Image (cartoon, rainbow, N blue to C red):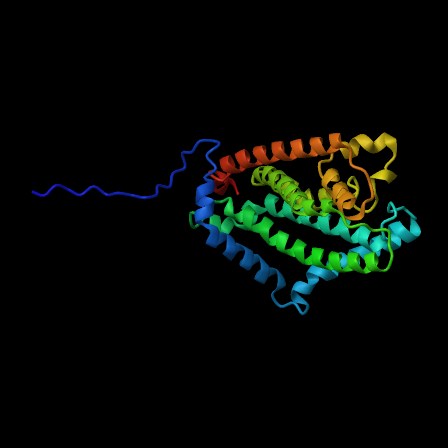
Length: 284
């Protein structure tokens, strides 16, 4: 009698994993799925809209005009010599990227509940796809900012081209990792307690006013400076203005604090995400 052939498997799916077993190689193997997630989000968001992707530009421009009216004209808050439209548009662009990345990361389990419960794939592909999709949106807005920048530069505004502009990808990666890490921490909580999910948009709006988005760091009273030091979003936004407009000042201690907070939040977020993805379907 012929001996039974032993079945060989090249992949094994198991719920028993180490806490730090993040399986980044599997995420790379599923990179096509990341592309499909990005395409899905794009098509779903702009389906049956007249302007389509132009909303990427319309929304920040409308916000910029509103901020110019309220904070620039009525409140007369200074912009450190930066033309108002550049100051408010850049702040809106960066804050929108952070807030949307944060909310996308926080809602990843709720938003993808249907597909997560039906088929296996590395769950990290979902927040990664969301973050990359938002980078594409950011780059479209950045292209408009470059056009506005060149207009003011050639019309004699006090702007100076600098090699510090090459830090732009680093700043965007910094903001993206910070938002994704914090979002994954919140996602681990909101799968059990929906109250935070309901409050998240409101809390993000409050956080914006504790970040130098519609006013420069130089306008913050000394008594409140500590609040901006411990807010890790403040440093990259203010550093962007230093690099592109040559205005503002970001102390090194503030940068180190923000980078350290980003690393810690991302590490905790990955651990909680890895732990939560194995059990969330039972409680969601």
